[in-house]
Image (tube, rainbow, N blue to C red; front, top):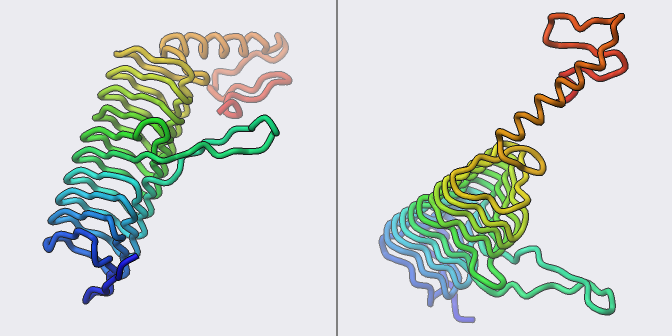
Length: 258
């Protein structure tokens, strides 16, 4: 296993780790044997740089981060609480109806100038490396499943989720709490509206909304038709007032629909 040494600021570094003399390690971080840390990179307190991790130059890794089984490019920012390189969620039932875990043995590859927000998770690959392309920006509390491939650049907002083996093209934007189901391919310049779930492939230059997500123009027409249908249920003895907060006879108010 080799030996660890304690630096003057109480960082714990394996004797065989390749750490640049120009890297900055805050107190109580841990650097494992096979880790590589480039020049100008800063590692926050209580962060673990685990096995098979390579970090490029001029990166900023926050506090309480766990990195394992991953390669990080240059000038990346990984905020506090992020977990990169843990096993993806892969299980199945065998012939005896026992739960079997699928092997998760590959890595996460993160390009240059990538930013990952606090408490987000990026799973390692099983049949291909999980990949996050250059200039991709990921918000807080985002889940990136195993085998996901993000060409980048892309914007992924808070609480969004990408299921396993999703492929995103360039210049994709996912709004807050949106998601993409497994094995779906998303083209270039695609927008997915907030709280929408994409369940099928999305061609380039398109905008999607709803659950299941559809072309946003169709979604708006459908929403308008539902609202018009709801208004038709107002009884003749109780005409709809001009106030936008319409109360329907025996039906919920508009406010309760959201």
